[in-house]
Image (cartoon, rainbow, N blue to C red):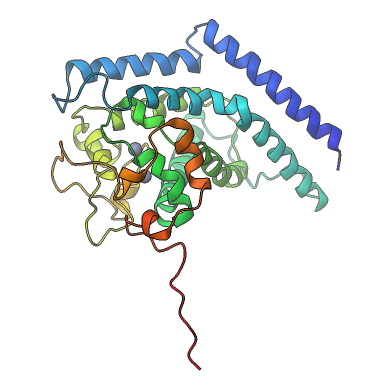
Length: 314
Ligand SMILES: [Zn+2]
Ligand SMILES: [Zn+2]
């Protein structure tokens, strides 16, 4: 294995991302994630201020600044600190690994001759469906739920809660998506519009707004539906969770995981036992790596991490 090649990839990743981040922050343009994120955030926040669903909720709600930091961290800083280098190395290592078996190309289905909009649509539907499944697993697998708890520790919903999540989720989501998406030969390089669209819908899903998009609610996730995903009390027959949709609500309606018993404006949010959940950024992102007693981590109904020991009877 060519170690020098990998060291160069790591070095280039850091320099490259640093240059990218600096130019994103200091040169606003229509093709710039940093300013779009800022613009969308201010836009949705203004809607929350002027058309609030829960009128009593403060403009600077609980954890406003914490979530604001998560937003910047997860969208940019984590890539700078680790993600960009890790993913570049992983992609190279994956290709080297395939190379050992004489495989040079993972593309199994070529759609690069399709019209541009159909490629976009397929990519979007596929990515969203994979994310919906990953999200279900985050709730179902006890170890993954420990990471996902950060997102569910939100007590008052507002746009910035959208990007309050543990950095491990980025790694999990991206890894699971990589192979299926790499197998399809998308001819498109630039998914900028798709990213901005999904960021906008995600912000709105968490906002203090009463929006359901009329009949489009069966396709698009929305603040009323996603509020129930964050509800502290789950229906007895859905102990792992409900409304797993990311951008689309469609999958929940197809697979019967939808649940909106009523508007739920003041429904308590979170999970049982969250009194013991840490409150600061550093303690929250290190939380899953500590050992927890199964009683404490298990109140949402997930199976025990440690099964009760059954003594064998001779
Ligand atoms: Zn969730
Ligand atoms: Zn959420």
